[in-house]
Image 1 (cartoon, helix red, strand yellow):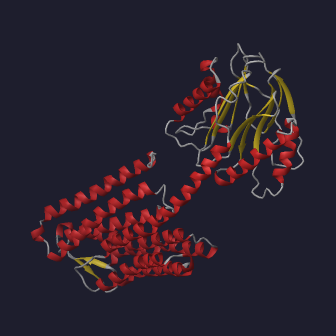
Image 2 (cartoon, one colour):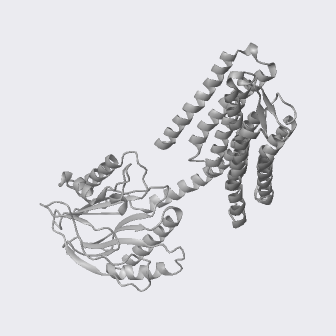
Image 3 (cartoon, helix red, strand yellow):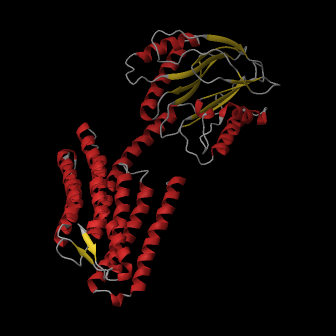
Length: 510
């Protein structure tokens, strides 16, 4: 199973490049400055920052891998991690350039970026907390907009500091100095952290104790450390502490969600197995009957799908064939699919014509259809003794027919509306006659709408080309040819729709 998509791999490579570059530059700057030329406290700070950067990089790799299977969207936690990483890098660089007059400009720029990290981390922590807690009412959205827009204030003040020195200055000798107004730079971060904790308290009944403790640890510990070191110049563990707490968040909150999602995934696997087992998959079907040959496949885009096919004998002579596609995706479509299949089969076994079958099924599905799902259906009955049949196309794809000495071609005729759209619908059916050697192919729109990396559909023309590669192929080979063509065309692009196909060859009564 492929856990990392191409887009994720590309993102991982770029971030890896910059993370490794930052670690390399920090080590190189330390070598050039010389450890002997640094104060012991500076060396301690730089060492903590470098260890935190290595830990942050490993965390980022874990984030990219786990984002597909962890419960909450890790986007904001990933942004929080990247900001904390930049904070560690700029903190280390600040100690390396401090006291060098020639690098006064680098000291100012570096500390400006460092000061920007605190409000950004607070904002991302708020966004991640609200995502994790699934708080999305109008008041939370309003506060969230205020917090995001409020970033303009601290960002502007950092820019103003370049001209006024309201937070810090770097004198002519290249030495960094905090101003008496330094604590004002932390106001935004403090307020946002407190608001996030209020949200945690508000949702406390839905959280376990360890989750509450984890959120409070991230919000409280850096704030306490920042307060303690505000008047203690020379020690700056805040960036490293923030990285450690992010590790705590990942290790406790998201791994816990991963376990919960793993349980949900197991339930989906059971549902997928149930759905797969209700579709006929024993081939050849009725091997003693030489009048026909058929084969069908269903490849869901998710664990469970909304497409289905079916085939069964009504009596000793008549065979029913079904190809259908439920609107929507996931569990709702799968449930609607199973109900639709059962209703169609139960009515068909009464020996009714396709139009009558869908009329009754449509009325039943319309009752209580609050989800407003519908299903497109191609339904046919075929007399194995004569090749005569009746078919209804309720909003489904055009079938494809090949006469014995001909080629596969689309059969166009007027459709009826889809099933479960309007109660009381009457469906139009038409007669057809198969001769020995005739083959038809029915499918869902997942075949023609399979898209490549440029989002261009496979289309009907390519489908017909695949069918006509081997015009004398049996049903199994027909479906393999189409599947292979789709696979070659789509490449590594993600499958967004179920792909379901059925091929039927009529051999004649004798």
